[in-house]
Amino acid sequence: MRIAVLGTGGIGGYYGGMLARAGEDVTFIARQSHLKAIQSKGLKVKTTHVGEFIIPVIATDNPSDICKVDLLLLCVKTYDTGKALSLASPLIGSETSILILQNGIESIEEVNSVLKGGHAIGSAAYISSKIESPGVILQSWVRTTYIGEFDKKITPRINDIFRVFRKAAIPVELSDDIWSAIWSKLIGISSFSALSCATRQPAGIIFNCTETSNLYWVLINEGISVARACGAIIPNDYVDVMQNIIAAFPPTMKASMHYDLEAGRQLELDDLIGSIVRSGEKHCIAIPATSSLYAVLKPYAKGAPSII
Image 1: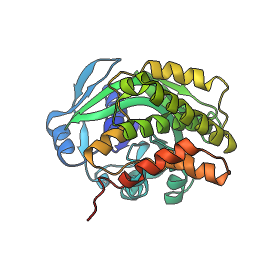
Image 2: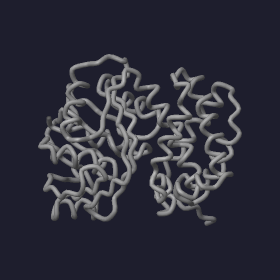
Image 3: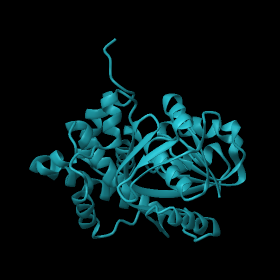
C-alpha cells in the first residue's frame, strides 16, 4: 500500500514508522530540522510494545514530490488541516483514503469542505507520542486505535487498512460507530488536556490529588451529557472504562496540548474542550466546569500571550 504521512510529529512518526518497519511504501512529509535529521539518519522510533528501531525512509517537505497515494495519514494539528490538505492535493487522487488521526470531532467537516466527499475515514487513537528530538519519536503509552467508516459500513478499504495496521503490530480495532468512538475519546482527552494545561502538572500529580481528580470526573460527566445530546452513543460503563485507562497512564504523562503550552505554541484548545463548549451551548446544556477551564486557557490559545 502506498502511504503518505501528512505531519510527521509524534503521531505521524509513530504510525508511519510502524508501517514502514512492516514493509509498507511510506513517504513522510516533515519540516525543518526534523526533516533534515530523518533524511540524514533515518527515522528513529522508541515504542513501549515493539522496542526501539531506526529505519531509512523517504521524507520531504514538498508534497508535489510524491505520486498519488492509496492512503494519506492526516496527522497535522487540527488548526492546520485546511492548509495542509490544500498543499497535499498533488498526492490525493479519486481513490485516496484519508485516515484522520487527529483530535476532536470537526476534522471530517473540514476534510469534506476542502475535498469532495468520500475520502475521509475516522479514527480514535489512544496513544501518547511526541518528537523527543529531531528525527526521534518517543511513544510512551499506547492502547487501541479504532478506525471506521462514517457511514458505519465495513468496506474493502477499511478492511485493507485494518490488515496493514495489524501486520505492522499497531493495536487496532474496527468500529461500526466511529462517530461515537471519536466522541468517547474527545471527552477523555479534552478533560485531561484541560487539567494538564491548567495545573501544569502530569498525570501522576493530577490523579493523586483528590481535588483535581474529582474535577476530572466532573469534566467527564459534563462531556458525556454533551456527547449524548449530539447523538453519540456513550456506553453506560464509560466511566469505569476511563478509570482503567487512567490507571495505565505513566505518572509523567502530559497531554500533547501541555507540551505545546510549555513551548509557547498555538493550542488545539478550540478543537478539544472548545468544541464541547460550543456543542453544549448549541444544545443548551450547562457545563460550568468545562466552560470555566476553557476560559482559563483561552488567553493561551494562539500561543504565549503578550501584553504588547
